[in-house]
Image 1 (cartoon, helix red, strand yellow):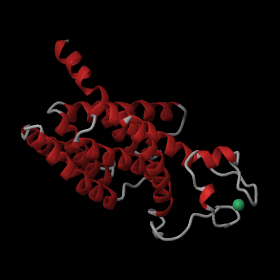
Image 2 (spheres, helix red, strand yellow):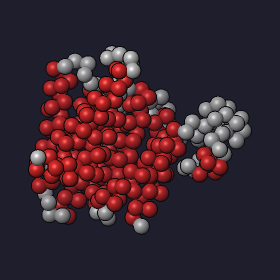
Image 3 (cartoon, helix red, strand yellow):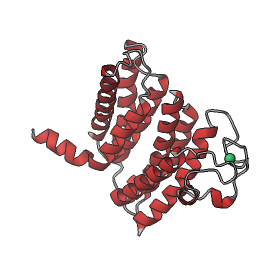
Image 4 (tube, helix red, strand yellow):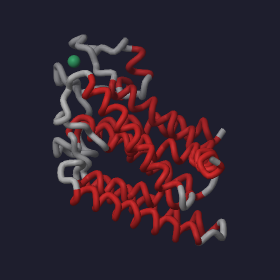
Length: 253
Ligand SMILES: [Zn+2]
């Protein structure tokens, strides 16, 4: 039941995230202003704005000019819905679920923007962290596990330090947005466990390295810009869901 509720909430949130991903980098208003067709400029009616359903009913075309509607927004809605349902199953009806839903939505938004523009707007990272932090604090205290807040602080500072060394020691390896994102991921992963931050960041590097080497082998060249944010987000997500078994496996060796 909680999973289904979160999935529906994820569809709606994903629909708004798609709008934000279009408007934030362009500096457009994020709340005011009705959505419109990119091709003919017609303002969309409410029944054309239903997540997934509208796209299916209109077979991916604008009702007026019949131009193809990009499938991206529908993909964002489905990914967010799946992620929210997964987080509900992972954390259950606890305070921290609120914090991790904010994180999940924020990571979807940041990944889309990074893939399109190779930037990670700092405003999104700061807003997400401030929205999620109260949930993490109350969640830890309600469980009488204040130590989680220490882990979170260590995770965040550790990730920040490590990425600062890479950023300054190896110019051009990543952007300053990646450093901020890593510090934020360290906070959330640290809350789950002290080992989750290194595991999540390692998985992010691994995913980025695999995709990067595929692109180089295809002849894209080493200089080709690779958005790092989505891979960090992916690594953190994997660590959130299967970090515990991975760490156990690694320690047993
Ligand atoms: Zn149109």
